[in-house]
Length: 175
Image (cartoon, rainbow, N blue to C red; front, top):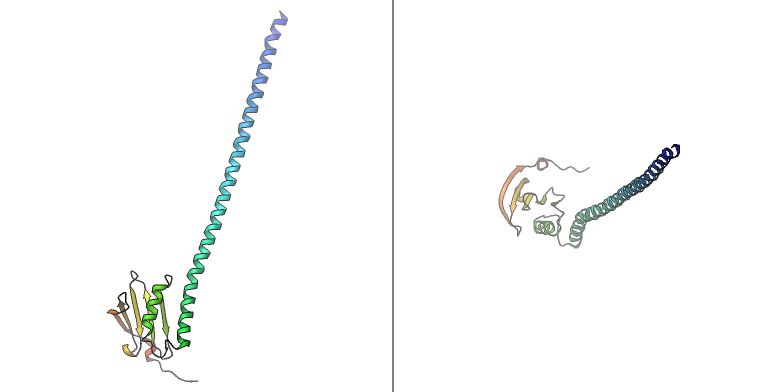
């Protein structure tokens, strides 16, 4: 009788050891697979995020270069027009169409103007709803700062505002 009582405990222990070892192997395999999968997903997400950051940086740089190049090009065009004699800085009357054309050609330029030695200036802006607005102070306005709305052809449609400019009262002195 002693022998029969030992047999069931050995088979029970053997079954227990086999089942536990298989279960542990399965848990280890599933756990390791899950861990590796999680790490690979994290690495993939980090790689995609890095690529996206690099792409965004590249596009911002390209847009910034384009945005900053337009004013330099417009200034170079104006400087060439002055040096060639096509536009004069003594009288700013002809500059209105030139400045309007430049704000239409260069999308990134919202405002462009010129000031001469006679203390006259003209500025063309596209602020309110992309409608061109002219700011001018010269002999024709008695050096009062005048703001005009313009139509798409650059013709003055209405006087919006007129104010006195402080520098119209200044005297020039030579040193």
